Image (cartoon, rainbow, N blue to C red; front, side, top):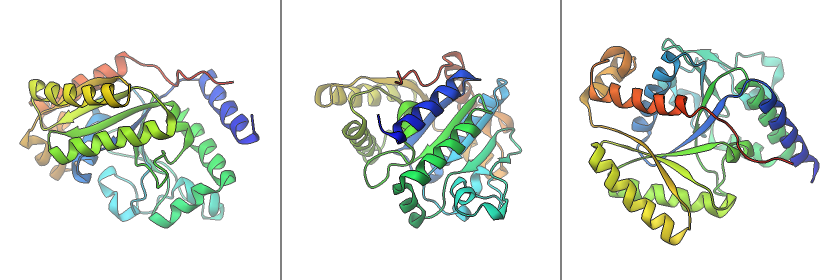
Length: 274
């Protein structure tokens, strides 16, 4: 085993020896606004269930493009903490909904630094240290040019694909699954379907699961569905989660159910490390 893998394995073992956060990477096959709304509305009930929740925005989006997460204008990224430590910028901001938010990097050009093994190892150490202070970490992730996660450690955690019933979204979701399998091999993925009833979501899931089973030889898991609900948009405009603004709605019930399933199955990084 080379030094990089030794450092990563050691970091994961240290994390597993202490409080065990659940690290869930969420890949989007939905629109950016839809996915951001999904992330924040999932974080809110997880926090209300008594969890210390952290959202890590790990795409190449610029800081000004992720204000919906409550990322502060004065906040620094994890990459900046490595490249410009003299700035002493705060890395975590506590949102009014109770969860915390952090950003991995900013801008497409920043992604080139992840090709440097030393920088990537430092980023993973900061990420793991930050994760260890929380119960659940939701990572808004995107695949890089090599069809991989921005951090290798994310391949060892859970991966959830967020999609809708739209044909383009279904195609994109399958593409994401295929790209990941090409990089990290056969493994299971969780699927959440938005803008759907329970029956509609099951049909969409069964179809994509059958294709994945037949062509990729993998099993997908149905995590849940989020119905179409105008209250989601209204709550977003108010800067609040739907569970806080409209707790009796169908959307609020769906997010509570999904959060309850995540919390009930609490576990982390079941990968065997050597």
